Length: 335
Image (cartoon, rainbow, N blue to C red; front, side, top):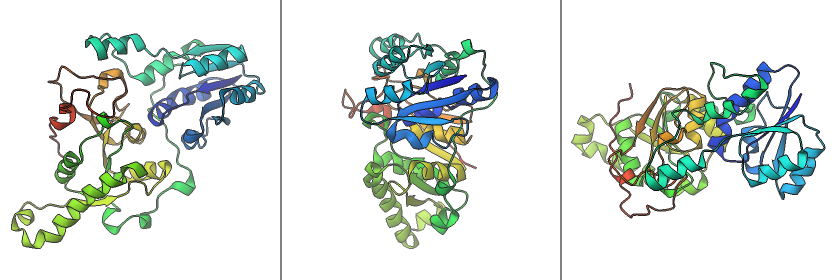
């Protein structure tokens, strides 16, 4: 049996499809799995040993569709379920099953603050999409496979950040999912361990701002008796923009804990079963995207009537106060 799995974007969503890939490969006999995604996300799937071939959306959906037609699939698992995937399914004319996106329920939660969302993780709903094929969820979590070339060696990192390190993934696609940089400093100070900041090139400025704060403080520490008495040990390394996605995943794998917004790196951390300290702004865990099958702590401001204000995010707070991030309490201890 030859099966095509489709999920075009984005980082976190693709990582969350990995249990579907695994159980199809492990529970069906003589199955060949192909995966279609966007070019920019190829590194998320091309090292997955359960996948025989990756098909990439580069220039047009028609080019991809023609490529897929030549493969003569027996079945399509549509885990994206949008207009583009509908065109592909119609063109290939084979049996298929499609992920139920619950757009109406999410609209009610965002616009009327009326929560009728199911109490289930999106991973389990992905698996529901393929149950008609005779498979069921296993006892494992998410998968993430790092190619050997992207495994970060200790000497790639400063000596201060080679053990007992904590990762802070400072990025997120939308502004209302990201903490203000002063609040990132507040958390890093409480972590009190070596911290590596991870993010894209677009996060470099924020990463440098936070790193500069601790470098300046540590430089002045001999003259600040109070800091010495408080035993401050936070040392920052700004890794934003310095590592590709797989390398960032490798650093997460080395860590003892991960602080992250509602982002793709949150799900990568869950794949490595790290303790995830997840920070929520305009989105809410009830959407079903919280860390899967790993220990996690949620930081969110539940006193607001304006949350959730979007199922994905905004560039800026629609109301202007941004209290979902400005007034969330951070109380934690890392042994």
